[in-house]
Image 1 (cartoon, one colour):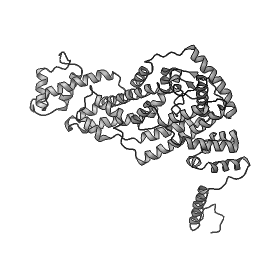
Image 2 (spheres, one colour):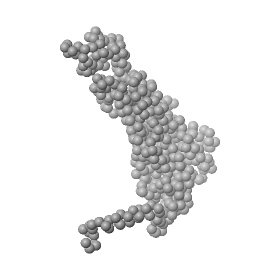
Image 3 (cartoon, one colour):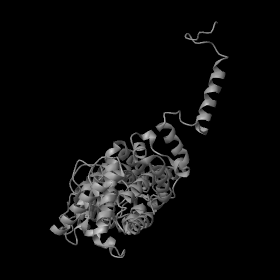
Length: 469
């Protein structure tokens, strides 16, 4: 304990030794945190309330017990998987043999139809019917990658906020508990993410339903458990709906399989947006003054509501606009190809409109994802992008249209969505072997080069310069 010559002086070593005993359950009381007379005397010398500290230690012990014995300072994502699978499997997880046969047949016919509507080749792996639980297992790594920047931000902000609320003489102790506090905040976020993913698994009808490539590369899948819910109010036959959804899913999976760079392009734009998120520290600082690690309901509610995520910055708005244009460009192509491939279906137009409305509005789980990560995965310009792809298809055909996915620099941009004719003119010029038409960007680049050349003419000639000196 403290030196006898200075019995009233606070000694951090004494306090840390006491905490080690308390957190280890020393004391022999029924609650595992009883204080003996010597410990009470030590607390009095430190100027701390023994009853208050004993209550805090009980809460900390419970929180440590719940957090497990692992030493990893990172976020434990097992809580996300556990929660997601709990929700996805609550109504059972089987798929009947009849359902599998129905969708196998739908995928088989959709494959033939797509071969007439696009030059992008078939998948190497056969499409499958999967359960909600399988969808969770297959997509969780991508969701984790997308959410990790936000989880790190929340966990780090929680540690900083608690540190700011701690007296100077206890900073060393708080620093030692930093990893634990990160696990508390990170685990709560992971559990909330798991809840969102679990609820999404009750809504999605196919692997590409959320618009981003969450399924493994080259895998097309449908969830028969959610199929009936999607078609309940459409007044179309199950076989037509199955054919349309199978065709759309195959088109989406084929595109990402063909344009290998596209998956990374989408994921990087999502993570770019997520890394720009900064937690509202004022809300956390207020919470930190009364935070109870064993009763995390208030922090959980803050995370779930999205209250910790402040208003987007201008940089985030720009990143979100780029992402929305990208998703619209992808889904617009999928829309047009699916429409052409399913032209034989009497109700294809009705189903297509239902799909577009569903993507525009988003379901409850998608809205929860927006609150949790601050990101809405909606292609707001889907109709305009689909109109662009339709105009391109009519003007230059499917082969020239699909060649735009061969390289990243060929993919249409936001300006092409606004003015499809400019894109069509470039494609026609390329097909005829002519030089592409000049545009404002070309003129601007040429002007800059001319200005740079003029500026350099007044300086010393380079050794390679043929002009006399």
